[in-house]
Image (tube, rainbow, N blue to C red; front, side):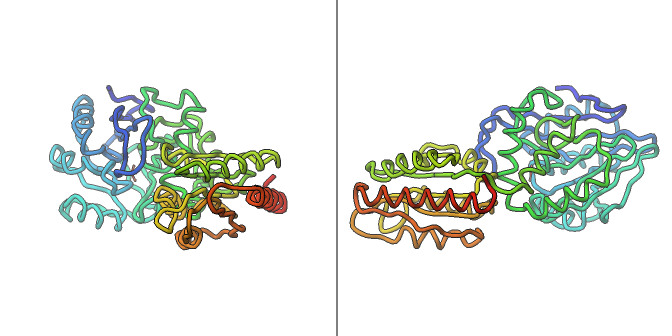
Length: 393
Ligand code: FEO
């Protein structure tokens, strides 16, 4: 793919990873991803912003070759290797270039990539570097989603290069967002998996960005935004809006008892006007579950009892919900056991990060019967009342 000129002398260099299906050995990538770098030619100096994953370094180097320019600065907005991994090869090819980073990012890049200390220029918050007729401002923005992160802003052209922030794991030949629904889904999945645990930090960054006039947001994953309000509005809603009248219901059933409870309970919630997102944890894409947690007010997990505790897949979902720190307000457990167990106590101990009210669980012995269905109705009543009482309806 050839570099794309997004403004005079400003090029997007995209290494599209159509086939990647897993990130960090954890996160599903159903639509692949891309690693975007940007080259900015000033009247005196040239700057590269971010590089690429080591697996795509040749794609980046070939695009740099095709532009035939020297490079004076390589900005590392973020130390994670999917953006920094090709810095050593870029420095080899352009030995006069200096790496521009926050002090924290410098120290992490020395640890992760063994880049020599004298190759760095560190920048403070709001510091600028001039390329002659162009000026880059560096905005420290820690915890997007690592502690060292910053955003880079090209003042004259009003382009923001936020690296991971506002990105999407989406392999596409579209330079800019062409199908808003598709990008909204991919960006929401990305937010849920990567940014949601740092919601309070992201909120501060969104507030700071109001000072800047932005014509293009050029992230380092996925398509660029030539209508920035699309993604800014979406982030505003994901980060700041109150949770919605939604119950997320991940479950596992071994012999059908928990499934019967889930089926009955879903019907009871729907009768009360509550939206339900149900996930069979033996088959679901964990990213879909993460996305559903962005807006939900309540999480109810359905579990059988395995070796006196919750099913391991349910424990994994609870661990994930605890790590992602969604806006949830209420949580409960439904499920079945054969002869005894501590599934509820063990699950309750797995979610210390969640500031939630635990609603009375419904656990039955063997197949659910009349009293158990009544208890499920009561739990549905309680959830409906809590959602209404908190203005989530
Ligand atoms: Fe796309 Fe945090 O790296």
